[in-house]
Length: 82
Image 1 (cartoon, helix red, strand yellow):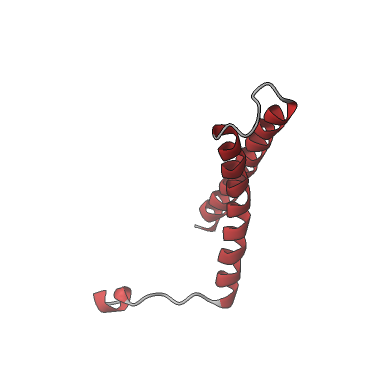
Image 2 (cartoon, rainbow, N blue to C red):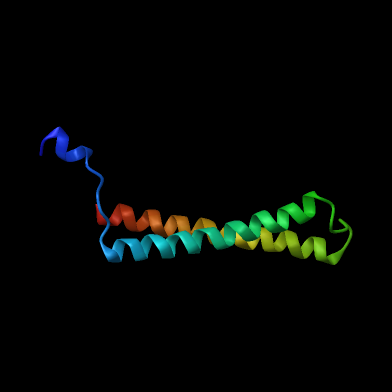
């Protein structure tokens, strides 16, 4: 292939587009939860001595771990496809 052929943008197949859309949703959902709960805690909307504060921290941890697993799974699949 010539250098000119490499410059053209690659078009995604429908299945690739669907995979990217699903991965985007799967990654953004826990990330948005992490950000939302962290903002509530940071902005002082939850009393640090309350049970709700501890629950929110648990939600942040759970969503962070879920996000890490999704990323690890996606990267693991990339490595096995090579």
